[in-house]
Length: 348
Ligand code: CP
Image: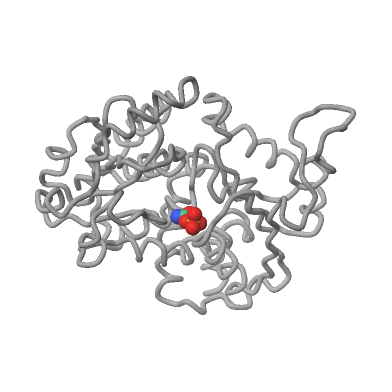
């Protein structure tokens, strides 16, 4: 494996093997505790995190590896991204040298690098993530970029796989837009849509007008659904979307309008504060499970009672981040397949 920037780069057998491996780590947390004693994992967080940071540090250490966290701008030099020479700006170091140096110390690098929010095409193409990866001599894991969150997607896929006893195909999965005071980025909704369609689910994207997802992502999701026996549709009616749903996955995201007219986007977002997952909406589902990647704003995105009384998978999703990332690191450090680890371990 060169890098893991997006699960669409990974073939079907490897994706399925990672899900199975995540379950094995969930059932045997101490498995492979000394497998990667000779490895160091650099974790570069340009943005805040609770789950990703803690679960990645633990994932590396529980496999025997040494995690090293770097938070640029807080105790490191500031990094320049653009090729402007001479570098007379405020930043002391170019990202090329910074990543080049880290990849001399570490055997893999994780990076969290959110959307810049100024150029839609640049964000949707994950331009800065690709610049970071191109500068690295070691595999780079995307810990949430402008356009994708593959670690979250593998954890969520594993939770769904376990919840439905591997029978996810044909289950109704609603990706439910919610109001939020901030125009949040699209990495999670993009990856969630691609993940659920890859599981063969009947995915409904429920969002108000003006909050459509990227056309390229929608097309990729339709291709995934067609290949796995599922479907992808869209609606601007959250109530009927919930009817008979097996899963309601809540997520806030900002509309693309924010790139050219942020105040119009904000006004449109604020006109949709009724887009919250309520217990009444969950009552329309087929005993549906609530999902959210966290962090979540109670009473804004979802009613307290849905989180507190369920059925909800939000804490399972957070737990599975640890197991799924151990599967990913195993894959990364064992020649591209978690199966390779399993077979070697059985033989030894
Ligand atoms: N879901 C998720 O990535 O959480 P953090 O932002 O806390 O890492």
